[in-house]
Image (cartoon, rainbow, N blue to C red; front, side, top):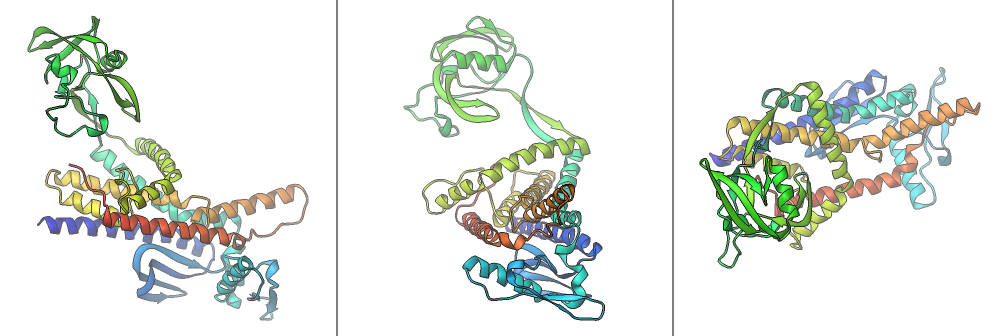
Length: 453
């Protein structure tokens, strides 16, 4: 039964991501067609075609490798002046077809020329007014932004549904005088926390002072204690000094004496930076807090997630390199390392087959996982780099800007931005994305991350 639940989780996740990919491509195709563009292909996946059907001028289909999708919009690349293009009139109305010269000198020049030639082999005489590069700049922005915007909308509606019904669950320290939830039996380095104490491990100061779970700390070195934050500051500031602790146990006032030790601990609950501070060895009593909210609350939460995602994108190559080192056994894989769709599927499968979680918790986790992937895909595609959608958006915005500047200065129209000249950069970016994708897939197979619990 566990294997069946695991398979169910994987299938649900993969299908959800494929649906997201399909909707992403619809986000490109629908406005492109509305603006008069010609879309010849709409495919989910890459590689060999598994199934396809021609409907009107567009071929719809599925390919074998479910790691993305694409729509083919005719006329993405304009003819370049350096290609010695010849415009040939093909009918009495003046419609023209441009034929691109295929022979050039220089590796990059030839690469660009070959791309133009392949692009223009699809252009028919009647397509002259339907080419993508001839669209108004704002229309290009709408077409290219449509795909990642759909992913962001998918994420928004899933998050909204979860936040409005199940809510966001978190733990917070119980208010009032700090009640002790747990007492360390021994002193362990921060990175060793969780392992069992050994005979040669020193007793934790709190255990030595006689503190036990359920005690309520009322004073520290003569200072009345009213909150956990205050107590934590007093302990950390005490370094390795003497500590006299007042506490109550079942209504009885008691006092314990010890000496705090100096240990490396995180600076705060939100900052993992380690700093040597005074250490006692107690944890506070916590309680579960549930926050719910509507669209505004969801947008606020997504704003925080967006900041975190942008930071993660900035460190993505470094973290992928960490996964590569984990694959060859140089270091352990970090818990916050990125995952591919393969890793996402494994996490989904483990979640659904987890014995501890109930059905509601499993459903919420899957929904949040799918929403998180969509948020990442949407933001990633907005990066202003070709071949990503953001690269085309940036080109269209630059085209509009320089045309506006030319009009203001009374200069001739500078014409269309030639995105083909950026193809060498696009190929480098695409190669880097391919390498990172392969590393993550291999990592998710060899050194996978697992659901904790």
